[in-house]
Image (cartoon, rainbow, N blue to C red; front, top):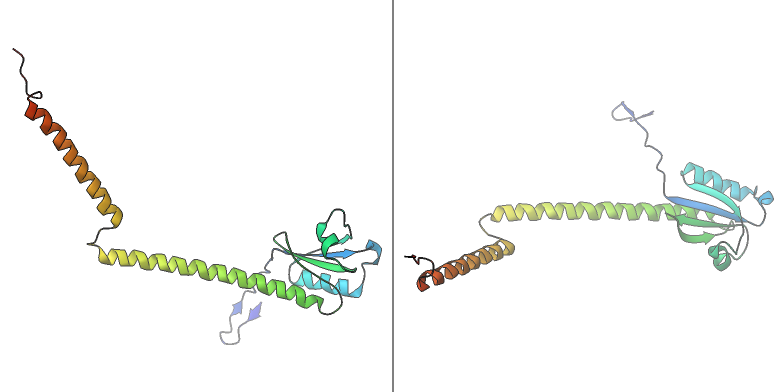
Length: 172
């Protein structure tokens, strides 16, 4: 448990978030995948709760391998099963993973903000309509006009029968 210094009460730690991100390490041979950088990437993925797999380069089965990979070992990053990018152990491999995580978090935050905005906009619209109260919507006015026209047609139909005398004809 983590103790909040201002309240002196235990605070439950956040649950590990499982991101829909996967990292695939592509190597020439599974026997040489004990490279130090590959181990660092694997440990970083387990800390970030990201799925990590290792597989052999296969250009006939994987179009991404054929089209993108320039040298081995290489790492592919996938989000929700869609290919995002490829990076190599040279340079900053852990930062590539962190960038994809940050981009995913930003997209999720944007979705939450959009949803909250539209929920708030709908609530404001409902409040505005209730405030107006005495005004009718265009649909209500249209429905009333249709009902009035139907009543007029009905009245004309029945008045035409009565004027001809067919509706009140008595048989002798």
